Length: 123
Image 1 (tube, helix red, strand yellow):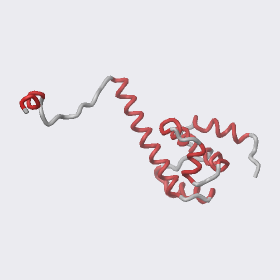
Image 2 (tube, rainbow, N blue to C red; image 1 turned 60 degrees about the vertical axis):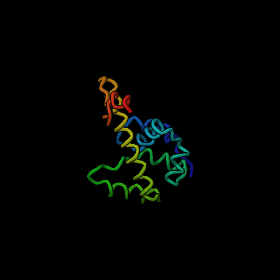
Image 3 (cartoon, one colour; image 1 turned 90 degrees about the vertical axis):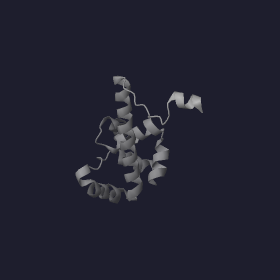
Image 4 (cartoon, rainbow, N blue to C red; image 1 turned 30 degrees about the horizontal axis):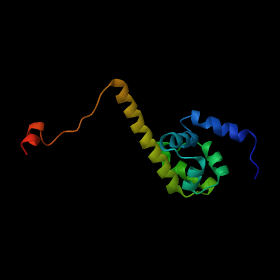
């Protein structure tokens, strides 16, 4: 099947919208270095299917299973790889935002030590 000319432009713009799977794919690229080929292999789909998926809305939390089923049925995908990708990227993005916020605020988390420096010198 020949892709329409507008598809590549739409796919390129999809990461600008957090509600798209294209945003998830771009975040996976930014955080994990995943290429489109890597993502297609992970989802067991073609690059063409990956382009179409990029234009889909992300499953909404309150109807996640239903929306996921609609997407995976439409593109004949196994749901588990897509769920894993979405959840992993959302988790990594959340940690990334938190780390950026801490860096801007200058806050630092320190680990507690079991022993003081004096205890170590006495040993």
